Image 1 (cartoon, rainbow, N blue to C red):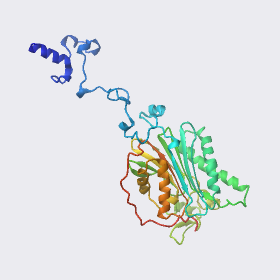
Image 2 (cartoon, rainbow, N blue to C red):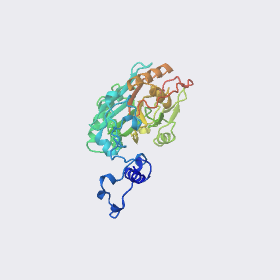
Image 3 (cartoon, rainbow, N blue to C red):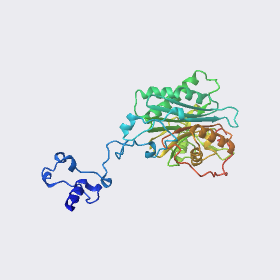
Image 4 (tube, rainbow, N blue to C red):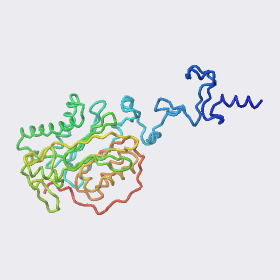
Length: 380
């Protein structure tokens, strides 16, 4: 074969042979500037240096191999839930289904006479999941009432309102009013001085997370292996909360353990119930937080009561959960760990796994033993 034939063959082969860096277009077909008029053998060829990408996220390099969860940073040997197609299209990214069957829950009585903690996990609508923990005090009546009716109020509001933060705020206030009406018909009942914390999370389309809270139960998100607090405790130690109590005519005292209390009785400034303290600034209006999940980085959501929070900090909880194989094991281990560290209060936890479950395994197993070995002491 002559040298001229070899050169002609190299030109028609394009960059795959390596002689030319750009696709060659013969002169007779350059005048119209259109690739549609080119013969098949002379159309641009795409080699490794100019790979043509597909218009689908599930085969981005046109390799013919479907994208796996691991390609998005999600370990398919740890969570293999199917993709939610409508939300994935709506948000422009693959979103795994968060299944209630994978959620882990645990509640231990601790050193108390009875367990006044309550928790609930359910599906409000086909798009919204509901997670809640309630830590009762002065009896379980307020926590029982919230466990029974909070979801119902939320369902009713979802039919009228789309904003989840507004829905949760209204639901908290309506439950508080309903509990007051309930006690009005039994004024001498055992729950007259009962109250409860409330930390509620709504998850819509497995990506829109909204949390509302009153009291000192907490919500925490594990993102890239680090604990991200979604709630702030409502205690008299907060300057803004203390000022509201004082403006309303209440006062702050400290018990023998050095813990501040509203009117010498309650160690929190917001709660559902506690109606004898409503005139002194103890309110049921929650603080809310909205966050968009990134399943590549977000491993789980944890809701906890103060039997755990007062004995383990958020990062310790995050590290322990990251060492567990599944959420059920994680929930049980956290509650057992709090009991081992000396908690005297009821301890309740809900662990909701997300796309990055198992990705951020922590090797940090050292914990601070200079922790408090006293209960929350909400009642002086």
